[in-house]
Image 1 (tube, rainbow, N blue to C red):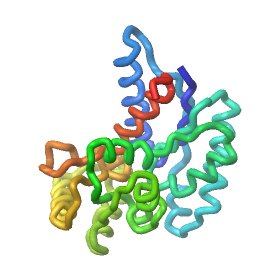
Image 2: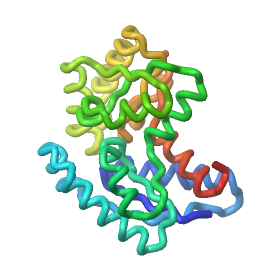
Image 3: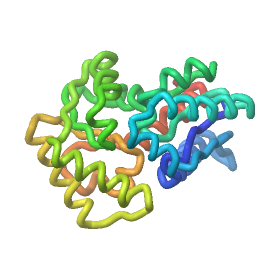
Length: 232
């Protein structure tokens, strides 16, 4: 089993989900008392979020790269960024870390491609929805077209993430708003919808809508375990 290095704390709510899921998948695969070998570098998200709002991606890349180097020094053999948005700087981090980075959009794209879908909706932070690093990767590597909500809906999705979900607040009214936006994406032609923020699956579940959902946290965690155990 390879040692997994996680850049976490963005937010700690979703990082705890990664820890739980990865260990559950390892236990299911290996049985007995097996669990994953994990090293976590958890950031104080207050400072990362402030840089996000100022679009200071170079500074974010430098901070996360420093964390990645510390994970490598501690023995990590695989690198994971436990958030969708920070994958905007994933290539820079991987280049400086010197170990493989398991990209969340690649893991998600593989699942969507295997299910034969060609057009999907994307929910996430405003950065993930509006910037092209996520959508272009899915298009260029997997031939998947991505639809995003309109501007007012994007604001709703992102505001709920930053004002509620990363604080551990999961409100029924917010769930209803998300489900309506998911339905609108389906009406616009999406064959499924990517929950492209690692906190969203803690609010919206597959049973909440008839639309096919792609839980990026669970998908990413499954891929991480496959790679760590050498089964992928």
